[in-house]
Amino acid sequence: MSDKLRNLIVRTLSGAVLLAIVVATSFIGLKGFSSLLLVIIAIGVEEFYTLAKAKGANPQQILGIITSLSLFATSCHLGFRAMKPCESELVNTMLMVSALVALLGFALIFVAEVFRNKENPTLNIASTVTGIVYVALPLSLMFYVPLLLAYMGGGALEWNPLIFLFYLFIVWGNDVFAYLVGITLGRHKMCERLSPKKSWEGFFGGVIGAMAMGAVGALVVGGNLGVWLGLSVVVSLSSVVGDLVESMFKRDAGVKDSGNILPGHGGILDRFDALILSAPFAFIYLVVVIVVANL
Image 1 (cartoon, helix red, strand yellow):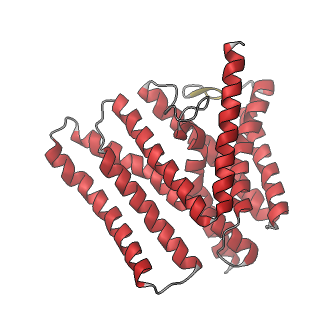
Image 2: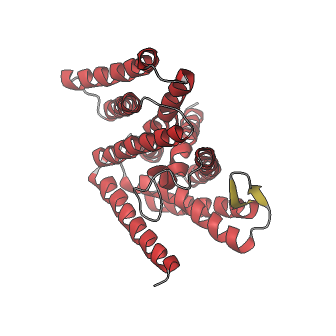
C-alpha cells in the first residue's frame, strides 16, 4: 500500500469519526453541543499557545485556558437563561461565578506577568490574550448561532440539531466546492503568500457550494430561504478569511499543522479554523437581520 493511499484512508477514517462525534453530541441536545464547543476551545487555545511558543512567546497557558473556558461558561449560562428564564439561586450564582472568573482571568494575565520573570512580557501577554480572543470568544458566540436561526424560524430560542449541522455543512460545503473547483479550474492565485493552492476560481466555487448547502438547510429545517442564503454568503467569505488567518499563524510559526490530535487532518485549529472565524460574522449577521425584521 502506497503512502498516499494510506494517508487517504487514515484521513477518511479520522474524518468519519470526527463527523460521528459532532453528530452524536448535537443530537444529545444543547448540553452536548456546549460540551463539544468546550473541548474545541480547550484544545484550540492550547494549540494556539504552542504556535506562539514557536515564535519565542511564553504565553500563560493555564490562566489563558481557564479564562477561555470561563468566558464560554458565561456565554452558555446567559443562553440557557434566555431560553428558560430561571430564578434559581444556584443558576444565578453559577452565572455570576463564571463571569467573575472570566473578568478576573483577564486582569490576572497582566498581574501574573509582573511576577513571572520571563523575557518579552509584552509578547507573552499579547499571545495569551490573542489565544482567548481568537478561539474562545468566537466559539462563545457560536453557541448562539443555531439558537438565533431557530428563533428566526419559529419565534423561540430552542435547540434544533439539524440547524447546527446544516450550518456546519455550509462551512464544509464551502471548503469542498472550493477545493474541487480550485483543482480543476483554478488559474488565478488568491493569496499565494499564505496559501499557494487557493485560487479565485476556487473561492467563487466555494461560495456557490455554501449557498447550495444553505438552500438545502432552509428547505430541511423550514427556514427562510433568503436568510439562509445570506448566511451562506457571510459564512463562505468569513470561512476563507478564517483559513487564511490560521495559515498565517502556522506559516509564521514555521509548522505545517497546528497539532496532531486528528490523524490526517492535523489539529483542532486545522479542522475548525473556518468555523471559528465565521462565528462572529454569522452572529452579527443574524442579530442585524432580527433587528431589521422587528423594526
